[in-house]
Image (cartoon, rainbow, N blue to C red; front, top):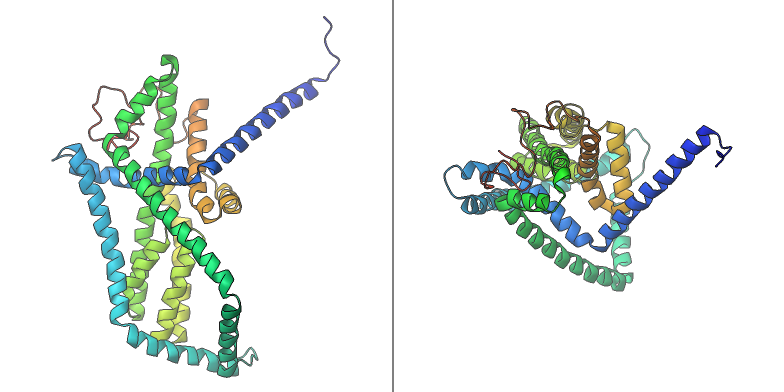
Amino acid sequence: MSTENVPAWLRTSAGWSWRLIALTAAVALVFWATAQVQLVFVAVFLGLVFASVLSPVADFYGKVMPRPLATALAILSAFLVIGGMITYVVASVAGQWQQLAGQFDTGLQQIVDYLESGPFGLTVTLDQINQWIDQGRQWVTENSDSLVSQAAQGAGSVAEGFAIFALALFCTVFFVASGAKMWRWFLDQLPAQHRMRWDDAAGAGWYSFSGYARGTVIIAFADGALSFILLSILGVPLAAPLAVLVFIGAFIPLIGAPLAMIIAAVVALAAEGIVTALIVTIGIALIGQLEGHVLQPLIMGKQVALHPVVIGIGVTAGTVLAGILGAIIAVPLMAVAWTVFSTLRGDRPQPGLVDPHGAAPDVEDGPGDSSGDDGEGKDAAGQTA
């Protein structure tokens, strides 16, 4: 049989082309399948996030009590901490609402006066602002039917949200309590010659995922603490509740931190004037820069070994594909995918992360460490404390 008269470069390009097409089709199939069960996917994802954060707490409690009881106590502790922060914010705002409302009116009048006589030559009067408010009310009246329909849809979304949270909590309980046993069961279904590679790859992926989740909590706490210091120095009232809002906003990409910054600036404007409000805005913006350029590389540099350009493109693509949800899950999914791929390829994504013949002594074991442990003291993916 004669050899085809085809250049080598063309044969190589054709080989890579059909592989790329097959890979693209596989990725598209995964996205399509995920979209069909989006609620379940989100619930499982949240369950893994909760498990990665609560597992160290459960490991700590597990030193003096059975694992199921330690799991329940860890989840209860999380509810108490989050519920306490929300209650503190609501109670603090309610206690000073009347005072802040009066201060806010004064601050709004200062802005109007500045716009009327400021250096930009704007002519915005209070009458014009009232006219805009009246136009907004008229628009709401004219579009009330559409708004009611959207509110009904929103009620359905709220119900779906509760269902997602309930399923996520259900998954979290089992991930934290018996994640190692679940992972070993999965490994037992694979051919024996492939179990070691799957175990190593999953261990590397869980290292990245759990590191990202825990790092996000640490960074959010740092943002809240720095915001509290800044607001306290400037004498802004409700510094602690506003710092809690910054802490919560750090978990919501793109809009969470800016929204918390706007709320803090409005309170500063109402209480201390426009100069303090500008200082608060600049200060919280600088805290955001400190987070992006110092805290994230320092805390999550090893676990999320992605270039900032890759992270930016991934977050943008996730936002286009799935809105805020896509922005939230883009970075951890990319980090896990790259770490698993690198491990399966035979690389070591992070120094000392995965050793094909055993975990490094200073790094957490990967999921499903089948060394005979009964699963006690391990988290959702079988990771030791």
